[in-house]
Amino acid sequence: MTEQQFIPKAYIKTVESGKVAWESPSNIALVKYWGKKKDQIPENPSISFTLNNCKTITNLTFSKKEDESDFEFEVYLDGDKKDDFKPKIDTFFKRVEVYLPFLKDYRFKIETSNTFPHSSGIASSASGMSALALCLISIEKQFSAEMTDAFFNEKASFLARLGSGSACRSIEGDLIVWGQTEAVEGSNDLFGVKYPYKVHENFKDYQDTILLVDKGEKQVSSTVGHNLMHNHPYAKNRFVQAHDNLEKLKPILESGDLKSFIALIESEALTLHAMMMTSMPYFILMKPNTLEIINKILKFREETGLHISFTLDAGANVHVLYPKNESVEILEFIKNELVAYCQNGHYICDQIGFGAQLIKN
Image (cartoon, helix red, strand yellow):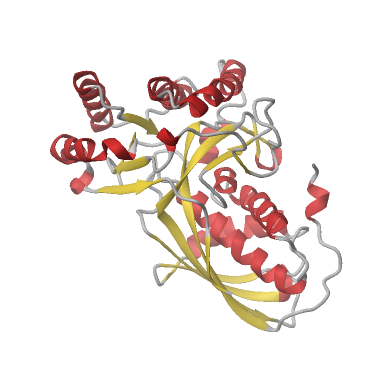
């Protein structure tokens, strides 16, 4: 598996103009990816639940232009022009131009909106970059009609990775693996793949209630956080741990062992934050209310025996994970005990989803 397979042959036809739209979900990693090599290659494998309600909707309008000397595009978020987004998109276009050689032939209008707060630790870059990658591949498919659905998804994931690493896990669902590991056949560093093994009914329709402890900008960008792993004193052991945890997760997912699942994913969440707290410079991304929520979840689980658990991304917000058949009691607990710790009482009810959807082509 090499990057060369994604460099297209000469296109059969061209299109003067058009519009395409995709909605693509965020995802929440169970085994976390933290640390990357050149070209957005992960230092360790990861596996994630694809979400359903937290998503980005992107409309991409394109028209042929005469001058092919540079990229030409405008970016809008919720109807407002966002020139501060342009450097990230420009970097993305430069990375993917060899795989999408038509990029300088067109001017683009990128109109995007999220169903959740931007830059608040719900991986808006994952949903946003995956939605943009899907729109661009949809354009390319008009030039290469023989493109299969499987290759379409692989290339979309591959391109999304070059915009934001975790974006490669948002193309499909419901469990996606990214990163080469002996634990999962077919896994690779270039794009995400569907988890290929048996999954117990306990993990179907799994719920994720996201408690928005802090809806502001993240204290440190994911890029900076990943780079801090280069000279981290515990990095090598962490990368080994991630491989081991993916191997341990396989029998858990097959057997439906919820207690072991909870222990593993909560350890992964805390390890991610431990890496940030022991880097140099160090960052404490949890807020006091994050810890209050975690302690209340632990106490409630011990008192009730219900299979409520938490995970975290690189921020203060808490993803509360639980099986659907326990959702009535757990949601009641969340509303009565945990929402008070959210900023302005805001939270999002989500669940496992099955990937991106084409809106318009």
